[in-house]
Image (cartoon, rainbow, N blue to C red; front, side, top):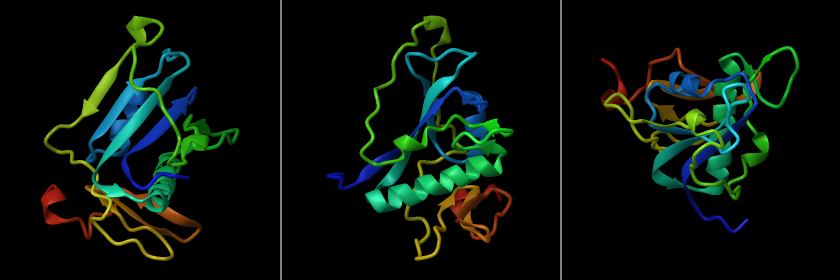
Length: 173
């Protein structure tokens, strides 16, 4: 790939059970952009999520961060990759590569189905991908209230229940 650095993480969701409105609840302290694709309908949701970074991120770290976000979606009870019997997230993992291309936001084919939400209130911040160091076994990134930490059964996990180690300027207290 000819990609040197990334400034945003892009996710593509298609025909899953995870609603666009639920994404902001999964990451309550991170600035997010959530918007429809051209073929989005309420019955068959198709939308994108963009997470802006404070600092550029290398392609390798981008993929590791993306994997952590996949684990967070799984921890919320959604399958990623089409497992039957679970609520499907609809996340298209084939778009995980840093060189994936996306169309810019647009109006949905049915304009009444269009939306563009910038979750950027005073409780949210752009993601600083270097707020905690990467190590060889797992990623430990602090995402405001979210902490990405090792999980014993998987390479990485995002744990929203822990508050230890959160930088004071990102903490609620």
